[in-house]
Image: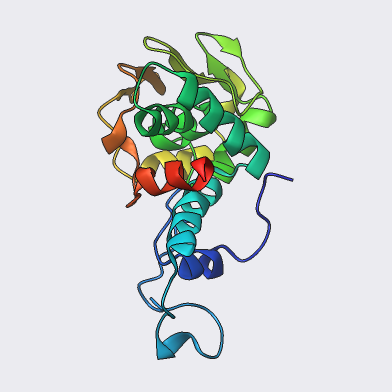
Length: 202
């Protein structure tokens, strides 16, 4: 399955970075790898290991299976845009991520649940496919009966992240309009996308 059901902070500690799409928690309190030897320090990482870590950051933050991420990489490589830029655009343009970045949900797994349970609309029509790709001028909102959900209200009151500049949020209507396609600077964590390209091109 694409969804990661294990301990999220442990996974972030292993990757050495916070992944806001995976969890609202941080590794600041224990910024070392999990396990009894974690405090000793990280072992020397091979070139392959560095590439794998960068790839896994994308996979776990966006909640994709290896097959899904590989398919997006192949699509990005066929694009006229730079492969890395296009790959990040495709990931950020997923509906579950857009719902998260708009502030409707505290994490991407929570956003995916809102989408799959039919609470989210795009341009007034219900969409329950998490991988649905948003476009410029799309308007993301909530079904009328879903606007008072406790989890949604809690998330909107205290969004996990600042909304990106490609999202225009209307507090009164509780809708988010897509102003532009996400770019390289839209990813809310450190990522060396060139290493991801090298991983899949090996």
